[in-house]
Length: 320
Image (cartoon, rainbow, N blue to C red; front, side, top):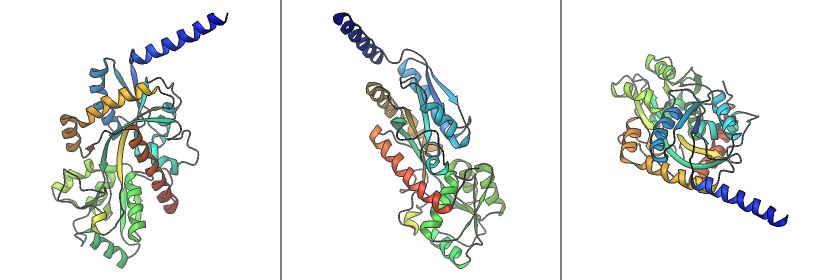
């Protein structure tokens, strides 16, 4: 009986090892915790299309939007850790939400295994052309001279545009009023019309208006200048040391996924992210390709969770 038991255990182990080495043998689901056409959705489809060709199995994108990404995050966290469910996470779903939702149904660190950070993107500080400022220093001086009279738009409470503005208020020590709108396009339109003086939106909805002169861009929110807009300084170098806010997207899997599958997926995703075609495509869309180790991705999540929790607590931000 002992020999039979040992044989059964060895057989199970060998089958498990074979399954890992043969991975993948069926369709892989990539959950996107936001709507079709969103940043995570676009990124998932771009990465998934190329992974399909490399792995020989379809990557099916499944949109599970709602509650700032929490619904999709919970679905991914509860999936079997076999490598056949992935999630295209964002700074919102896996960093901001920890501080924003009192009872989040998943823990971004405990419940997920990082695969690779894929890309990041700056927000851009835009102002109405009539505002008598040409730099961040000018804006701070005006805000301090007229506290509570300037306002900034965002695409909603708890969005990266909202928290970018709150971080600016904290570090620059200014009183600027937040005005939420339904989506980034609405926030950009509000600045264009002069209803609101400034905003910190993602690049795509703002760039066309900046290029036509309908809006003035005075800074990007990342720690380094953005390659596609090298003439625009960062907020940090313009008088607010330590300021950094960025959107990011990366692939995660449920905790417990076999290390060999993590290594396989990381290798392929990093190659895709760092390819010339992907770098050029992302740059045109207002993002920077990255491709990281799982450990580097984990550090980014932990750092952003701590940073945004402080901003959310200080500002009193609540989800829409």
